[in-house]
Image 1 (cartoon, protein in one colour):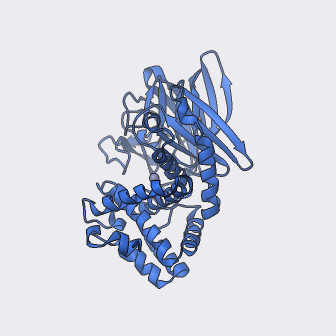
Image 2 (cartoon, helix red, strand yellow):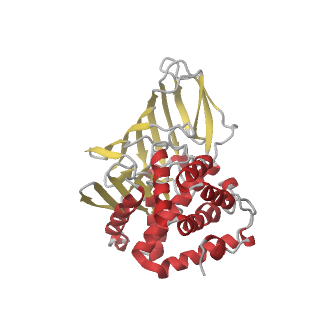
Image 3 (cartoon, helix red, strand yellow):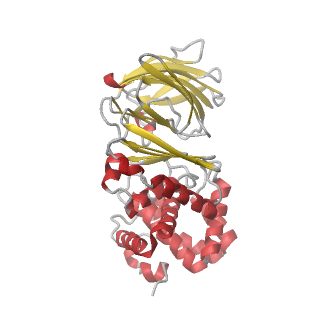
Length: 417
Ligand SMILES: [Zn+2]
């Protein structure tokens, strides 16, 4: 599937106008897209009959994108065209907005019509007023400036689930190119300290993780964006976005690097469907990788503090839901998917040998790197193949463990003392 999209953005008016088409659709009679419920559709459908759609404003939102509503279409060909417009006045999910200081658009605002879980390529033309710095999870292949505005042409680098645009007159872009990596950092003009030493640290960490897990799937690009806002961060290979406001408060601290490492590690750990309970594979893999990198960069003192946090949070988890049944809406999402899984992996290093365990993890990543289909069952099967039945039982027990109060984490898992 491939999108061809034209987007005109008027930040002053919080307004966006989009037209485009989607080609090579799967062969089926009917198809459902999701789009921001506040947008006004002008056309949507197959080429000869672009008015045969139903925008179901009373329909259900897909998981994770509360603002989206279904658009049903009868499909007689494999191409659909669309045209619509809308405004994004306020933050959606704390991260997406159209204001003069910041245009940040990703799937959270349902700014493009999407089919949940289906990968695609894209070719995008974005029109913005001059003086904006523009970044995307694709590559900007050309820019053309007129009197008023600049048109950027962007192409996806690999099949993706999202089209991210981040643009602001407040942002500065810096890059360093090494033999096999073009690393870029984008940060608010007001916080120059955010760029100091960061690109170097992250490029080094990137190479180090590549030595452990094999090459990442992002094909030579790495972009870190500090968006001029609060809110949270997310990774869209080969870019990740963090809150510039929060990062500026903890610049270049060990904790700050740790967050960078976690987001960057998603260039590898993006092998399970994030909309399922299998997401522990992504988050646990990223946090464990960040732990290894933090240890490498900052030594034992800092990671002992991390370890203390992992253990105390695991003992204090609110629900009795085991890791593999934890939903994204659970209050224990973070502790279960990130912290407990890291403890489980650190325990596996101790119990089955650090080299053997990492060799298994590398094989697991490599097998699923080109799709997002890795499941708990796949993980356990491969663990048995690479590390033996005992290891498979070890993982199974921990993944199904309800209360972490019932065990001595230091002794039983980490084999400390
Ligand atoms: Zn993560």
